[in-house]
Image (cartoon, rainbow, N blue to C red; front, side, top):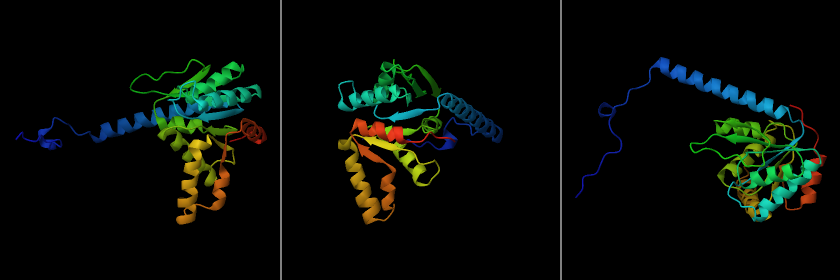
Length: 233
C-alpha cells in the first residue's frame, strides 16, 4: 500500500520563515496605502460623471442572450436621457450595457478588476479605472449612482445586490432605486426571502421588500430611473 503523504508539514520541517513585526507593519502599511489610492482614484473618477446608472450582471452571457439584449436596450435608452452608464467593464451584461451606451453616443464607463489572468476590458468602454481589490471596486461601483440595475448573474452579482440592499435597508445610503431585471431569475430568490427570511424566521421586515423592484418592462425601468432624484453624498 502506498504511504500517504502528509499535507500539513510541521513548521520545523518546512522552509518557512515567520514574518517579523517590522515586516508585518511594512506589509500592512503597503496595503493601506494601496487601498487609499484605489478609493481616491475611484471616487475622483465617479465624481466626473454626476448623473449615472450602474449595471450589474453575468460576464458569461453572449449577445444572443435575451438578458444581454435587454441590458443593451435599457442602457441605450438611459444614455439618450443623459445618464452615464457604469459597469465592471467585462463581457456579458457589462458589455451589453457599455455597448448600448456607446451606440447612443453616451458616456460608457467601467470600474475594472486586475486578475491573475489579464482582465479584458470590453471594446465598448470609453473611460475606465482599474482596481486591485474587489472590495474597493465594489464600493466605487456603488458610489453616487442615481439607480442600480441588476440583471441575472453569478455569485458576484448576487453579492453586489445584497450589498446595496443592506446599505439601503440600514440607511447607510440615501434611498435609491434598486431594479432587478429578469423575473425568471429573481422571482425564485424573492420567494425564498419572503418565505424564509420574513414569514418563517422574521429576520427582515415586510416593508424591506419595497427596497427593490422586479420588472422586465423597459418603460417601467426608465420611468423609475427618471423619477429618482440626483444624489448628493
